[in-house]
Image 1 (cartoon, rainbow over the protein chains, first blue to last red):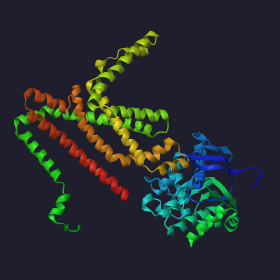
Image 2: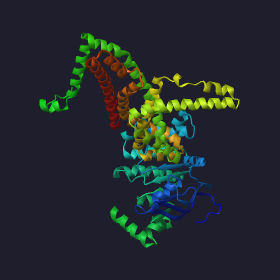
Image 3: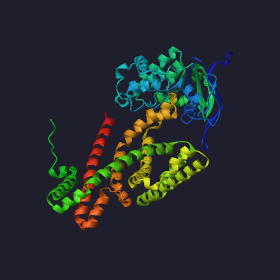
Image 4: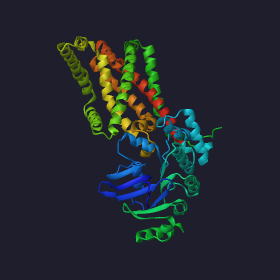
Length: 252
Length: 280
């Protein structure tokens, strides 16, 4: 992928992450262009979640560079918080603020980080809740609604900050099967809007439909990077072939 | 309409709080003794003022200890080396010394030491010509610091360590994903602590805070060794003067029991409220 303007949304160079003796990321280079959807697949323990979490420094890399819209991310830097405010993140376990209603979950960061007044924040929150289809749950507490609804609320919470980039860390892995579709539908809506997204997922059907590019990771390395058609139909490496065949067996 | 309880008497009697009935009877018997017996009555009237002293000292000292606990507890979970080690040092030192010894040490060694130091500072300021700063400092005298005040400080510092551990446990009881979500939205560590972690932590801590308050009410009796006129000190005075040990110490014990049983009912009520909130 060449980009004459060099305006990458994310630019990662020689990224390494060690957890004690375990190397989770091994010299990873990765770029994501604005407006593109990148899906990361791979077996568990392959470092795909760690890579995602390094993009907004929830995990501090051992060494290497991460640039977001040209800004180099540095730990304990004031700009890090500003950059994070522009990167929405959706977690596997939703992580809605347990002591706040769905509405207040969305309002909190708008008020604390963006200093939006309560009335405006509420309007923004309701627009996002409409969008993900749970406006009627605004005054519920997180544990009073279903997992799928919680995850959609978490997406609304991230969208309310008007992020330039959305990160999804296995957003459907903690959901009951019948709730996966409602979350994927919301994500598909975002894909159509053209927001830049990086998604770690095991939903191969979604990856095929949504992704501009798919990367396969194993042992902390990017093994293969291709278009969804290319990667799923003609995987080049043996490890990719093995992984895909195992996934497909499980799905049948 | 409630369903009729079909359990046998024996089954129901297992759950029934008989102990509370017995405590209630004990309290009533003692109250009757206080009302009807002149010697018990005299003992109670002597100790009455001390109840207010005990409650006041406990309330103020517990308030301060919660403040210390919050700050030290935050230090304990901090990733900064100095903050973490200072907090742990304080907690380990306080927990490693008997409370009685610690109260003597703080009231009779640390606080006079600090006062002496302030006096020396004052003289030094006068020496370099800063008379307006130096004179009030040099005028500070240990006799100006009452024993009640020293007792409050001693209790606060001691219980601050326990409160800090409650705060640490409370903060760590909140799922790490909550902090991650807050940080991922661009909140600073402090903003996330204030708006996301502490509100949840404090709710989890409420029963422990209540129990700690009850412990402090009981341990406040230790300040009687500093001649603070709390209820224990007055009971000792009365017993020593009249040789009516039975009256003095029975009344004293029941007074404490009264206060702690009432408080523990409050704590149980809070416990039930917070746990039902979780289910809804």
